[in-house]
Length: 346
Image (cartoon, rainbow, N blue to C red; front, top):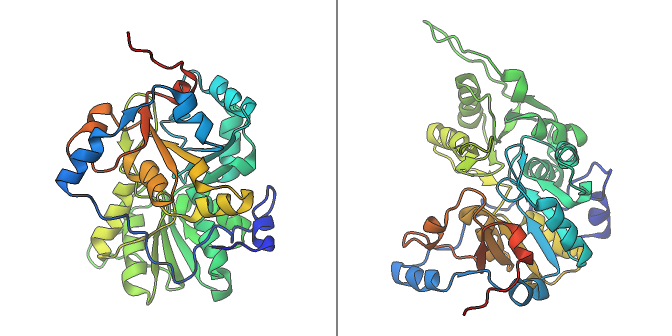
């Protein structure tokens, strides 16, 4: 894929365009590679190694690290111990870094504030969220020119990104707390000008939002269904896992019978941009995350190395279990292990 000079420039810090990220209008929903057979899985699991000599196994072979955020850099609003020092060491070693999150609750500007608040020196152009990827899709497909609207199940992050490209929308936080009339003759009125429903993580999801989304998709001819991600669980606090956007997308799938176009990981949108803009060999990029089905799969499907960290949602037991069919190149406890001395057997 080739990006034009104009498209690349449009995504620099401070601009409003996102079209370089977006797929062509005819792009179908992302379909992961076929799962391996049970016997293949067992063989692959045997080859998953814990990172033991990070210098030779990883650092010498990697120019760019792409980090997931939740479960890798922080848990909820709590920074994982040792992260600032590790990021400083990576920069000192001349490594480029990008932070790619499937969480759509914040815009890029919102995530910059979070990084700043946690004391992390991260530039805005190093941050990519699924809310930004959703806006990029609308920019590329020239949705604004249709005169139609977007209905949002989600939080302010999606709204802020659509505001930047002047795409009209309804729903989102404006529909928080709404309760439909379900008495005799009661119904929810929906806007017939809605041509796309976007479902992102929403801590205030309610029945009114679900009903409005299903009416738009089922009754508005040609209405599209877009999901920012399909994450099963997420980190809202450091005390436990919480139901993720997959639960909200599942509700809309259940009442419409339709599959969404997924704009976040493990799709190729963001990595295609990074590779083209920085002219980087994919084999010199490493995806680091805590999820097998998004982060590691994102690496596998896009020709990258991958490292799974155990600081998030995936346990060592799950990684090495017989039922798992997605194998990273290496795994470790946290990214702090990138600078751990090699383990020498006695």
